[in-house]
Image (cartoon, rainbow, N blue to C red; front, side):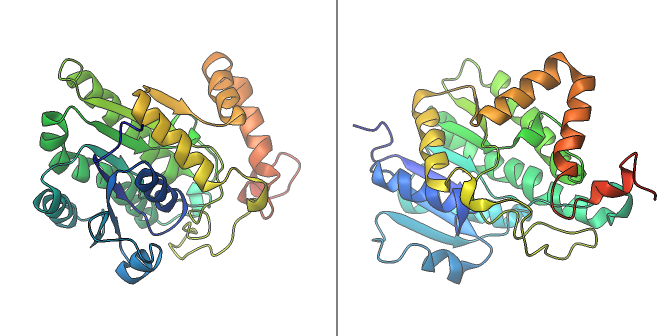
Length: 277
């Protein structure tokens, strides 16, 4: 029997991708699930026929502190507690820093980092009371800066630093803090990634059908929650990247550059040694 049975699991950014899969898998393990997204119609349409005593919906922009406070308070009002908070809401980008409007990086920080801070701030008293779990859905970009994704990498480094400090503060309280780095997973995050001027990219440079499914990723994350894992780097490629970056940072620079240079339409072509600017 799952340890999530009758626990209240809060998931941000749940209308698609990993967040949506997390909600479905959590409910399959008998958890009560509270989900939020900016588009409430899309969010509700993603969970047809689910009973009100199993799921709670809220329209929330996690970049806004008051939205996060209201969401968490309404969950506690409905179910009396929060046991697990999964900070999943996030957006990405693809553009050279030189070309990128600073407002794009600020938007990524507001959603990916501050959204985590806001939701955690208001959920923590209940989580601590119930000796629950705070989770951050991070990325390999939180361990290794990725070219063309400066704002995304910055936001994930910030998230991991925040969660690591918080975990240390809470070390003797029975409260668990963890983060997960899924690697490349089939989701909507790249389709809504920001371009240099902040517009939606609208396409992905990756072959989504060859990536790990969101459902498989969600199962690994929730297994980690139940087992109280410290951190999870899901893919073999991700684990190798983290290891090489730790032991051979200069080599990692070259390998990561080469990897992202091969992307269709890679912005790094401008900086390729053999390419005239």
